[in-house]
Image (cartoon, rainbow, N blue to C red; front, side, top):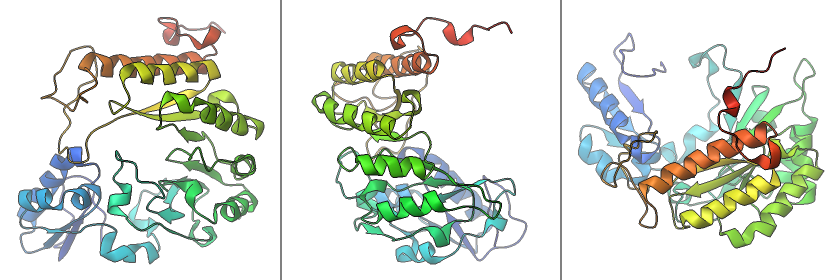
Length: 327
């Protein structure tokens, strides 16, 4: 068995080749890999799984007809019970990805998680899974785990063989309705860094967001350590998204923005920079324009710089990030 990154021969003749896939708009790379390995090892059985293969199995089968397409968790979740073989990974890898749950308690239209993992399942403890000091939780809704309070307490008390505490991070934003004063405190005690709050709703829900920020601040987080996760180029207009961004500026927190692409989009040719593009190049929501997509992203970047540098009122000053301070 060998883990291979990119298009290169593995050094032996495999019987079976497993290819994973990420977002649908990166499908081109999946089929390039499938074609490469099919030609290199024509007798090997090729299987494609992952996000794209699960959301668009027909498209995947059509473009790589020689491969077997696997939907959902591999072999019904059998891989979840297999311990990770870290000898296949770089020796200097100092973190591990971990799940306390699969699926999601919500059904957001822009998200594919509940379509790929329709059943929400969870574990009561992650202690047997810990192999590294740094943990990155890939739960889609970490706080949705009914055992999350117990898990957070365990993480806070855990120490490595050398007596060091863990360093934890959640890849997804925390659910506004599930973040309580006690859970904010437990997150801090469990050594979670860069906490993210999911603000998927309209601007009118700002009191909930402000309250969540306050809970994290009371638990010991600084404002500039807190992030608000927001999706744009979607149902909410540019004007409303700017209002949400402006609220984050007033609160002194940073923003993680996610440009929406439809779940059936098999390519994304968006190019960063000032040069304009049209809807034939990349997905632009009917309520947005190319100019607004670029302006919003630029506004987020500049506002984050202003918050990080403690600029007056969190307002960006052109060129501030390039200035050097004499020591």
